[in-house]
Amino acid sequence: MKTHLHWRDLPPDARGATVALGNFDGVHLGHASIIRTAAAAVDAPLGVVTFEPHPRERFAPDAPPFRLMNPEARANRLARLNVDHLYELPFDAELAGLTPHEFAAQVLCAGLGVVHVTVGEDFRFGKDRAGDAATLTALGQTLGFGVTIAPLVGRDGQDFSSTAIRTALAEGDPRGAAQMLGHWHRIEGEVIHGEKRGRELGYPTANMSVDRLHLPKLGVYAVLVNVLTGPLAGEYHGVASLGVRPMFGENQPNLEVHLFDFDGDLYGQHLSIALVDYLRPEMRFDGLPALIEQMDRDSQAARAILSGL
Image (tube, rainbow, N blue to C red; front, side):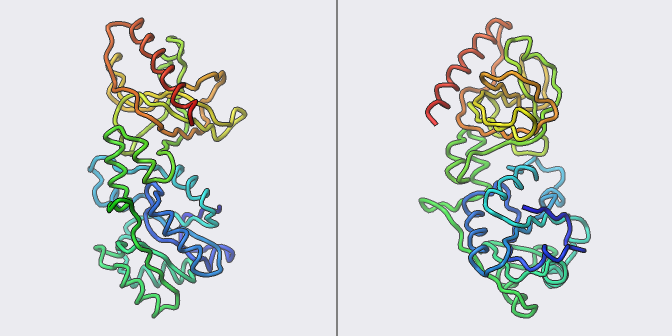
């Protein structure tokens, strides 16, 4: 998959795609349906058009973090759907100020040269969200590209949505979230330096930032770990703590992951952490021996859960 960070000055082989258009936060089953519909619409390379930052981050910068995925995780998931081109457009003042007609003419036609566009039926676009799927269909007829409106997808009368997935994660239900996502919810990024307390406790951890992401319920999880880069790349089982480390008086949330049966340096490498099961909430202990005993129990519980996958 090739990633393009603007709609201007694209190489010829990046133009002429059939594209799915939207934010695709989480790349859930509804999003996957839109992308499959785009792929089947015409015989052309498959593209996904999305935005960075997410428009909500621009218009409500002080709101609590809501994103399920950072750009790296979204790109990795889209690549698994056989997307040929990811157009990650900069959602800046210029793009935010385009009317629906200007967006269709300047970005989709002149910039990307799309042959077909597929959107969900609840899609909105353009300045002040003035355009909808019907607007896009009319613009396509005028400007010369096809449009398909994909129906919403759901189960048991509930549409799959990023909002419903956030709710499941906030309630400590990663398996419920996975049923709507079609995959495990993952936190991805680079391993950063921490306080190295885990090593002293016999549980060395890889530390990752969760900045700008919607926080699942704080606590301890059984996790699948994919090391994406470096000589130790591969899949491992592990246990992770998501939270503020109340034993040590720190309050900036992060993710600390202990990989089972692993020995190596992961600083600077990129990891993908799949939340499988919620084990327990964060706790404050009377001392380090009690903390270590609980970590032993957490590890045993996580090993038992993951051995059944």
